[in-house]
Structure formats: structure tokens, C-alpha cells
Length: 69
Length: 505
Image 1 (cartoon, rainbow over the protein chains, first blue to last red):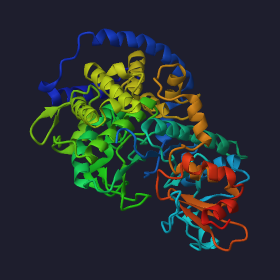
Image 2 (image 1 turned 135 degrees about the vertical axis):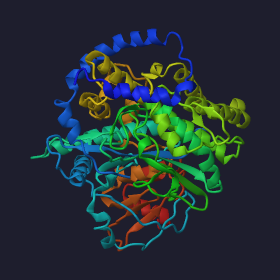
Image 3 (image 1 turned 120 degrees about the vertical axis):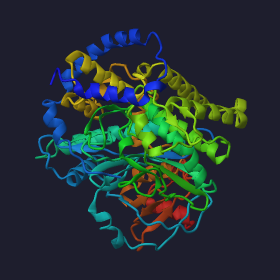
Image 4 (image 1 turned 180 degrees about the horizontal axis):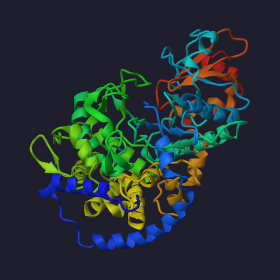
């Protein structure tokens, strides 16, 4: 599970094709800013690890709702 | 009008009993609602929701009063027995289908609506906690989200009071592009593509994949971008209640505030026929989904006139028109909240265009995406990882100690619009500037005699009177503190109140 990354990759590629020639130019410092954010986020993840429900797979599988509205 | 308008939200919460996937959601939802009632209003008889819609005589304070409208026996077993109650803050707490639902009391602006919407989370959290503390009960967990990722969706609806005279075609024409594009501001974020998440990836909106048509009456099947349900719960000659079903349930105060504030401003422009441009979108349903599926916010929407623009650019067009409209109409008289909504909206759009990740302290979908990307980077998780799906779900867990949004907010990482103290007060107190004030105060001080209530009435069962006494409240802006506080202060019992209203004193 930890190394399988095909899902996200596929998604990204497909989208890149769709919008292809129409992408807006990303700003230059975006990458840098993302790296800085990542450091902050890591410390939050440690906190969140402790409150996440046990057994993610079982938990999300059994979260079944009826439609509403 | 500016951002000031009678409005409210209604939110169906996801409900789970961990370890008991077979639990009947209608039963557990009823347990939640009843548990709240049994402790907060232990002395009170259960005020039922009044489904009757009758609107006779009016009195000077804005009330209508009719006698002999119903016999008490008619009201005892209405409503299929599903829990359905009115709270002292003027809100409605009930079971809708298989979800506990909270409708805010009527508010007059986006900021107040945020307060009473967030108060709903506290009500629900308290209710679930109490239900779980009943002897033999299991823990019940509630989620302020919109899908189970297995094909089911449940709603967070917005309601806006509008002038009846506004042509509905104008609403459809101008609101559809607005709704397609506003996701980038008020989407809640979702892991999974397609109604049942058969595709992997992240998208901006919880709801986009569940919409199939442009306009319609349905809310559960063939969901329309513009919903035509028209029960004004007010004078139908004067008002329409625009029932918006396309929004996501938001945890972020900024998301909810902008969702309501910007929509109110666009509605004001439509009512005043200010918008001359036509931003009609080619293939709106497909565009709605495409925008949601593109967290980079670079997807180009094609307009019917052939132009192409991103959702952010489309929102900027609306912003520009709203700014002109507000300047034209109010100039230096523009109220502070309208200015604040406009400034925040502009600031958010500018940063979305530059780099969406800058909005991780303000917008739900970006805050969620930042956590998810954090997990992907740290643990090498792919988008089909159950752990990422759990982060998505648990972001909306309303418990302060377990909900991920709540943890972020507690760390000071989410920008706030309102104060905790305001939210806590709103759990018990109604807004003071709508008819919710009258309803809420009646529930607080006459609970033993309130037989039923609804948006447009309060019904009393007065000892010594054979029939129920129904006080219609058809004008949303009557029954305010200014109108009725003195009267309610003066009347110790419901009998006193009814006598005062009918002039029998």
C-alpha cells in the first residue's frame, strides 16, 4: 500500500492531457512555498496520527449512508 | 440589498455507529435528536413541528392569530413519529430520511448564519454524546460531510429569501455559472472521483459528481444545479425562498461565510437587474464536474459565447460586477459586512489564481488537500489508500477532540470569522432580528404550553381553552426583539401571551 502510487499518477496525467495547451503559468515561488508548508504540515500529521480512527480500511468501508435531502 | 438578506442553512449529518455497520440509521438518528431534547428540555413537553400552513388574521405587531384551527388530537401522531423539534435558539432539529438534520434559525446576514450554523455542530455533538451515554447505548459519531463515497449523498442546503417579482429565468441564467465556479471558494474537498469513488484522486467538491441536470424540483434523484422548490414559509405573494442544494457542508467559517455572502450579493444584483453580461456555460453539468476535478484551478470553462476562462476568473467577473453594483447602489453608505465579504472574496480569488495552496488556513478543500498531500509525501500513500479516505472523512467529524478540522482550528491554523463565545451563546439563544426570536423565546419560556411550531407559526395548548391557539409568524422580519421583547417580558404564561395578542385582557 505504501508504495503504490498509480492512482494519483493516473489522475494527474489524465488531467494534464485534458487541459494540455490551456494551462495557466504557475508562479515561480510556488515550489519554495510548498516546501515550507510541508515542514509545518509534518508536525500536524504527528498530532493527527494519534486521533485517526484505528483500522482505516475497515472504518471507511463500514461508513455507509443512506441518501438524504 | 447588500449581504443583508433573510437566510439560513440546513445540514444533514452523516451518522455512524462504529462496529455496528448494520445499525438502523433512522433509529440512531432519532436517538440523537431525542437525547438532546431529553436533557435540555427535560421539563418541557415536546413541541412538535407544525406542518399546517394556514395564514389568517394579522395584528399590528406582525402576528396573525387564528383560533379553533386544530384539535389537540390531530397533532399527536403526525410526522410518522420521527423526532422533530424546535430549539430555544429558533432552530429545527429533526430526522430527515436517515440523517439527523439541523436547520439554523432565520438570520439576516452571512456572519450570523455562520454563528448559528456552527452552533448546530455543538448541538449535534452534544446530542450524540448524550445518546451514547444512555444505558446500553453505543457511541454514535456524526460527520458534517456530504457523501459516504459509495454512491450516497446528503445535503447542506442554503435558503435565501427573495422578491417574488424576480423572474426565475434570470435566477437560472445568472446563478448557474456562479454555482459552477464558486466551488473553488466553498468546496469541502473529497477523496475519490465519481459518485461511488470508482476513480482515484482528489476533487474540490463533495457534491459535484452527484448533479445531473441544470434545473429541477428534485433533491434526491437527478439533482439539479438550480432547485425549483418553492415553499417560501412566508407570504408567497411577496417572497420566494431560493432553495440552494448544490453547496458542500463546510467546517471552515471562512468557506461558509463567503459561500453565503457572495451568493447573497449575486442575488441582490439579479433582483435589481444589474447584470447585463451573460456568462452562460456550455454543458454546465460537465463543467461543474470538470472544475471540481481540477484542484490546480486551471481548467478552462467554455462559455456559450465561445469564451474560455477558469473558475477563478469567472468568480472574478462576478466580483467585478458586484463591486460596481455595490458602488452604484450604496457608495459610501456601504455597510461594513458587505465590504468585508467583498475584500475577503477578492483576496481569496487573487491567491487562488496565484497558488491555491496559500488558502490552506481559510478554505476547507485546501486545508484538507494540504493534510492529504502531507500524508502522501510522508508515507508514500496513493490516492486509493484507505488512510487518505479516512482523513477525508474524519476532517468532518464534529467531535472537538477527534475531528481533524477541529484539531487544526484548535492549533490556530484555521482563520476564524466568529468567536467561540458567540457560537456557544447561539446554542441556546435565537437571533434577535428575525421571527426566530419570537419562536425561540416562546420555546424557552412557554415550553410547557407550546404544542407545535414551525417557521411560520407557534401553536399553544392553553389550559382551559378547548382548541389550540395558533400564532402565525408569516413575516420573517417581524417577531424580533424590538417587536416582541417587552410583550414576552410582560407575559408570564402562554395564557397571558395569547390573551394579550387577542386583546382579551
